[in-house]
Image 1 (cartoon, rainbow, N blue to C red):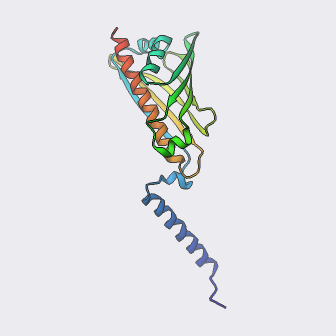
Image 2 (cartoon, rainbow, N blue to C red; image 1 turned 90 degrees about the vertical axis):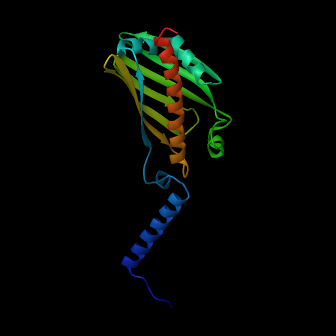
Length: 199
């Protein structure tokens, strides 16, 4: 019969194995969140416009601008629905997005294309809520949009909580979603600069 291990030795052995496992994951380029260390990621992106907040709000409340912004993102299709309500508006953008720019592990998850439904609710000209749903996918993106005056211009601030509930690759998928949102916002910003300049 071999030597027995005390409770403390068992505990230290389990901790050592866990540390080795985390070290292996990090060394292989995996995100620590994929090992269950964290849940979701915080996203923040700022866009600056050379126009006052009221003008930026009116732009964002214009369905034609939203359609042009979708076209600039090279989506497969997009259906924009916008309704003015009091001092604000509600928006829904139902779009089919390309996935050929994603790495292979993400295309396996997303498919040949993916559907995203962007919903915004603005109570007034200062900001609103934003939610992006991906039907059939275990991901959630929820947060806020704020228009803040800065000098004679405006800063549009988008903050989101991004969560992908997929074992092992959830953290990497969250980063890719954040990159996609950033690219979409930057494309919209380019359209917005021309829109506000009257081009």
